[in-house]
Amino acid sequence: QVQLVESGGGLAQPGGSLRLSCAGPGRNFGVYVMGWYRQAPGKQRELVATIGDLGPATDAGITNYSDAVKGRFTISRDNAKNTVYLQMDSLKPEDTAVYFCNLHLLSTNTDYWGQGTQVTVSS
Image: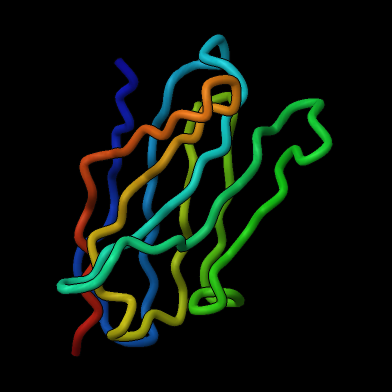
């Protein structure tokens, strides 16, 4: 059973910043992509950002962002701590959503999810 432990989130004003963290399994779990998705009320879950495994693979550490957050959010990964971060700057009210940490295990094409953390951007 894979557990993804999320932290961070909360309330921020427009233009403010928040940082999310997600602790995942150790290196012996395999090669995996980690990322963040979000779901606003009445909307489908959508991709925010992903980052490739930091290893010898050709796509190691490669990041991918949705157009909605590109230039404002930064995803990073610390393999020593088995943790992925999402630094969110220049927040907008439309960033309000529940943010979910995701781990995609490449060997089995399986997705694992965190419990979600609320981010609210409001003045």
